[in-house]
Structure formats: C-alpha cells, structure tokens
Image (cartoon, rainbow, N blue to C red):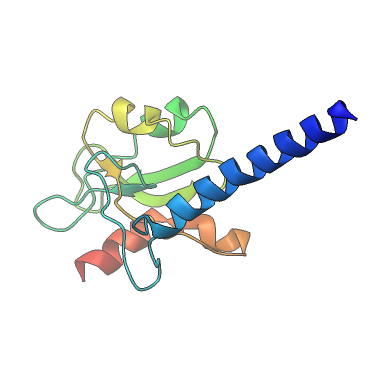
Length: 147
C-alpha cells in the first residue's frame, strides 16, 4: 500500500513541476516573430545563393574562366563563354547557371574566383514547391538588376 501512495505523491509532484514550467512560460515575453508581417534582421555574414558582380559599366566581371565551376564540389554551376565581339583578348560570359538545389553554400566558388566576379547574395526568402524556381540564370538576373 505504501508503494501506491508513493507513486501518487511522485506523480502529483511531477504534475506540479510541469504546470510550474508551463505557467512561467505563459507569462514570459513572446519570442515568436510573426514572419510575413515582421522581417528578421539578417546577419552581416549571411550566405545566400551566389550572384554575379557587375563592373562600372554594368557588365559582369566574369571572364568565363570556369574556376568556379571546377571548384564547386556539388557541380551546381555551369559557365559558358564566347569570344569578345570587340576583338579584345579573353572571353565574355554568355551563360551562367546555378542549380541551387545542389548547392551546399560551401563558398569554394567565391574563394576560387580571382576576378571577384561572384559573391553571396542577401536573399533569404527562397521558399517554393517547384524545383524549377531554384535554377537561376545569374547572367539574366544581373541584367535585370542593372536595367
């Protein structure tokens, strides 16, 4: 019989402790952010997907050397270039695609770029239900951004 009362006392004590935690949490200040109506403060070191950097004329700094493509362990970058139309040396980027579904945000592509032609974006709200929404044509995005 003493085991019965001991379990009853232990259960009541456990219930009181749990209710105490619940009551303290009920009266403490709210820490939940109402997301669509309040936007979070993004830290300075936040890494979004990569984006091309424009030069002073608004054209991409990228010379289509392909170092970012070779450095990417996930294989999510595709770069193609063509010869310059003005007859100068080097190439001009004609196609730059990022498959963000494969990207691990490791930063190897940004570190390997000797021309500082790519950087991390500050975009954080990238929710979608379609895979196609995460395949970015970065050259097209840069042109839209500059126009």
